[in-house]
Image: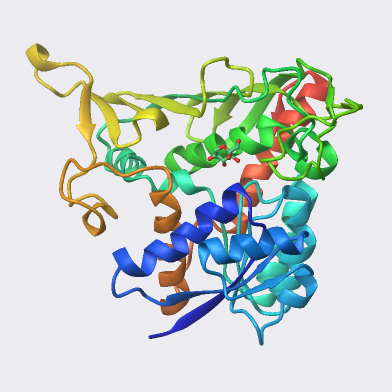
Length: 386
Ligand code: SOE
């Protein structure tokens, strides 16, 4: 059995989701295309990384990523670090001939994304960007219905990605609220997901125009290093810091296929914890998907007999759908974390059989280009071509 030694940078929210995927994949996608070996996990604080390694079963710990990115030590570099830690380590991994699995968004801006994609092409390594929602079985069904013409010509893409974890002004200035670390706020964090999904399902975007707002402009500094998402406690002396990213970005888009699009990403949709939802309208029907009902797809077909027309809710848990038969019998639903196991399975399969993998870094550059042109359109208050 081929083994792939993984070196992972970061051990917070995404580090846990990825570790779980490495643990689950060889058991449920058995026999695996290759066996993940959780070789090295790297983070700044030795004691925290040590306890994480024990909790999730990593063989070694490292506090210097430069020492980990070595083809004698690892075969796959998993970048689950904050966005400002994507560029240098990913390029180092590419130059070392190591395949890369990097969390989204690929970069803080388009320039960084293009540099990483160039390094990957130049060094001929495989590199996947973890837009995990593509690997929801219901999203795969949506793609099948669209590609096989069940909803006809596409008129509209309408998507929102709504969260509300920073509506409290006392929530501290964590890394996702700092442009030097994150690059942007929900725009790069959440619009990135719905832009990737729109491009996966409908194809490219040719023009955009947007608007943004930062509702709360300064926040208490975090008590700790303030880089981890989990560092939610404000500092004792309540020193304040400036929020340097968007709190909400909305934009309109014209797709290459003639469809019109609307996108909304915010962390101020009070009551919406992680509400990723889109609707696609076509000449023969419509599709609606909602992460809060992740296993379901709503489908309307104007080809149904008039007496039976209406949105039907398809429970996408039958074994005929991708990935489903590896888990449970029909009707036993799966969750958000399973999409990471699906990503790991597809990437390990692509590595083992030397196949293309998507979304790769070129796909991630396309997302970054749309995000950047939205920001440019806000500055110029005019439409921007992508
Ligand atoms: C935080 O906003 C976050 O963890 C995103 O970074 C993820 O990509 C999304 O899936 C859930 O929310």
